[in-house]
Amino acid sequence: MSAAVSYERVRDQLERLGMESALSFLDTVLERGQKEERLPVEVLDDLLSRELAARFERRVQTNLKLSGIPAPKTLESFDFEAQSQVPKGVIEELATLRFLHQGENVLFLGPCGVGKSHLAIALTLKAIERGHRAYFLSLHDLVTKSRAAREKNRLELLLRVTSRADLFVLDEVGYLPLEKADATFLFEVVSKRYEAQRSIILTSNKSYGQWDEIFPDPVLATALLDRLLHHATTVNIRGESYRLRHRRQAGTESATIS
Ligand code: ADP
Ligand code: MG
Image (tube, rainbow, N blue to C red):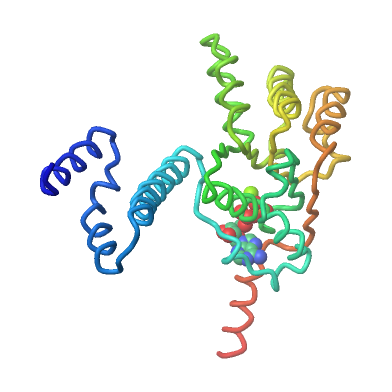
């Protein structure tokens, strides 16, 4: 078979195999192989690596879209100097995602505006970048979804969605008190993930002692905390809202200038 026929066949087969990226890089890879006098196995390796890298990137982009992350926040854009309450070393350790591989939870506690959601999103992004599937939503959204699902008899389906993701992030726990049915559903979500040893990142403006205020039933609150905290890192952030502090600083500075 002539080289021209082989070339055509390779193009055709890559297309039929759905290896779009390998197809688009074929000429580059072949030319490079020739110029650098690469071995056939090296040329193949180059081609397949490019296909896999492109597939991984596509998966990351899809996972990012499906994750429900409200705004892109990164660890790089987190000002650790401004927030001395946040131990940088602990966050860096969390960013290795060892907690995710070990099925451990992460809880960010503290008042409004201190960066809990920022850190939760940043860790979620890290997980997505490394190929994990994440599902991010506020407790309010979970409650709304679960009420709608209950009406349509589809609560099981929602439970499956929340247990399947590699990482489940529950933001803003504590802003609204839960009704009995909502609290029970939350307990099921947490229990299912606990049994499957899958991680949860949770943010709350309430300390553990105040969880009785959110839950209609203290026994449920204790059982839930028990599961959440069994294998967990808690980051307590005290202090003032980042934005308020900045606004005030800006105010003082302009006051000094004028
Ligand atoms: P919380 O969830 O604790 O209420 P957020 O994470 O939503 O607070 O933070 C409020 C705003 O301030 C966000 O826009 C966030 O990006 C920003 N922010 C908070 N802390 C920091 C920080 N240390 N460095 C940079 N931005 C911060
Ligand atoms: Mg928040």
